[in-house]
Amino acid sequence: MNNTSTLFSWFRLILKRDLALSFKKIATFLIPLVFFLIVISLFPLALGTENSFLSSLSPGVIWVAALLASLLAVESIFNEDFRDGTLDHFLLSGEPIFILVFAKVFAHWLVTGVPLLLASLISTFFLFLPEGVVLPLLISLLIGTLLLSLLGALGSALTIGKTAILSAVIVLPLSIPILILGVAIITSAINNQDYLSYLYFLGAMLAVGIPGLCLATVEAISINYD
Amino acid sequence: MGSPPFFFKWASRLLPWFSPISFSILIIGLIWGVGFAPSDYKQGDVYRIIFVHVPSAILGQSIYLMMAIFGSICLIWRAKLAGMFLRSAAPLGASFTLIALISGAVWGKPTWGTWWVWDARLTSTLILFFLYVGIIGLYSSIDNKQKGDRAASLISVVGVIIVPIIKKSVDWWQTLHQPSTFSITSSPSMTSDMYFPLLICVIGFYFIFVSLLCNRLRVEILTRERNTTWVKEYLNNKV
Image (cartoon, rainbow over all chains, first blue to last red; front, side, top):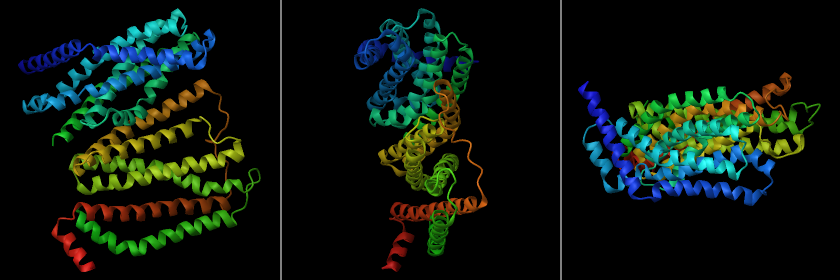
């Protein structure tokens, strides 16, 4: 009992620290959000502004932009702590790395994923998405960005101290199922088809991904500190 | 078997026999397939690219599976040789996958009229190629060889769990967005005149892979253990 409560206090401590750090530097949560909106607004500029054309493209555009925004922000998960030595200190403390990974992924998602949800609301006006689609869009992005944060943490832990583009090359192919399912959810919602089965599958992936990808990330960190 | 010197000795002893045998199997298969197998009644002689395309596609996939198996051995038992296997096999797997993609494009142009189709199978092969490139990029960016081995092992194990999901989702995506323009999945039933040379080509490709792999492993072992006494003795005897 005592053990679990210490673990939980560690979780809260790391989460608080990460959130405090990112609110201190406003760029950490504002830049991915603005990046997302810039990418979204590039598409009408490149492809033309016809309403029906844009709204048929919008699910793919939103998801590709979310993928890029989430993965570009991924470098900050472990690299800064690696550079200033915080990671070393945590590992020396002897606490399970799992709790560190879990808290850091959650903090990263709160800082980059949740603002993306708000930005995606703006993008529905930009891309003329029908109003009834907003709910499935939000739910799919909610689950999808959490999965992307998990995958991103793995890529970031594998490439600690390296460039972000390497972790993107490793993680982007693995994130294809998330992209396909996310687009499928929105497309079937636009066509008034049943999108719940895709949503369930995305949720199942999240349920497997939380323990699975966190364990893989723990292994990746301990490889670096062998 | 797990120790590098032991493997090195055996590989050096077997390769002078094994390499010529595998080259001759491959050449027999290719000559039989390209020169003597009957031409297809629909595609004519164009179909003969199958004798390169199918074996390399099979190898591209099975090398990835082997890498995941050896990767888990590397992670669990920290076997040095398994890590070296990963490093030696990844470029070969990437090359075979690339050969499959290019030969498929060359085959597609005369038969389908296009170099590329966003078909589920083509797409997942392309993704497989990207996964190989990611693994190669990862271990080549890590200076410490052992850490590089284990990082590459980890990503190949994670990848092999996700690959079926990718395949499944690509299948969905394909059925969602475009009606199947071409059916590559249903292969035409072949006569044995075509099937046997194909089988020999597949076996030949596997043999070539094993002999290339053993050669690469020998080089890897020598460079990595260059400071040990047995490598120094071996090289002194050579000179």
